[in-house]
Length: 398
Image (cartoon, rainbow, N blue to C red; front, side):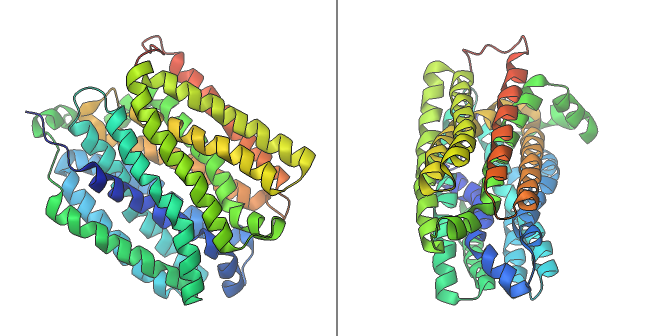
């Protein structure tokens, strides 16, 4: 019996909790550096600790959801997100804030993982279209996150107080989940996956070129994004002379492109196939990597040399993220939670490493960061080639 899928809006909002909690703090990093008198290489851990919390939790979250269900895991994670937001709000030193952000990332991980697993639970054929719609709604979160963060910072003055927003968001999402989210795990189907111990499940997934390649496509696409995000607010303020509100508005415009691209990519995949949509995204991503290095090298760091490649990057990621995440969970519906968790974890771990690398390399000059971004787009393409090297993959199919 096919289980009815919950509201796409509800799944999108739950998924959006994680990226919203991540990007909300971007406008505050400069003030946190001043408040704690810490170098940027340390301050960027406010961002990367959240990422590593996401990455660490997701395989465990996915595995547990295959055993006990999607609903209890979703509820528990949101509650943890709320508690961590409260700790962030009152953190008086950098170490406490970083630890709390790590915990907040663990809690935030449930929305994205459970939404993907729920879609796989409730979809018999093509899951790319509903997933792309959820991701399109989720794309609103990074669109408004920096803007909300900038205005909250201006309103409150204290960078810690932006976590009042994540506290409220957590409560707002928890209430409809409590009342409207049904359990979607098919126990009969799940029992076939439960026969395998956890390490056998992951061994099975890691032996698949399709799973590994799709996960790396997602990871390196995320890597280029976070390499830029780690230094974005500083580059915009110091190199371009744009304040936090201006940065938030520009970032929102870029994120609108991402949401439109993601929604369009899902519809397009039903006509030309998921792999063809991914291929188009990979090409756009390569163009973005080439442009950001070339334009900054020859024209310098200015608004034009940054916005043109960012436009290509956000359009590319709308295609790449939804298709790669869908492909990663497509072959093993009986362990959808485990595959969803492991793919997201590995992908975000790669993204977190690029974020740290960017923070370490950045010394006030943006050009080295553009090289990191370009290298990430090349590895993203090579990961796509790993998928297509599997003889079972028809690039013209879903």
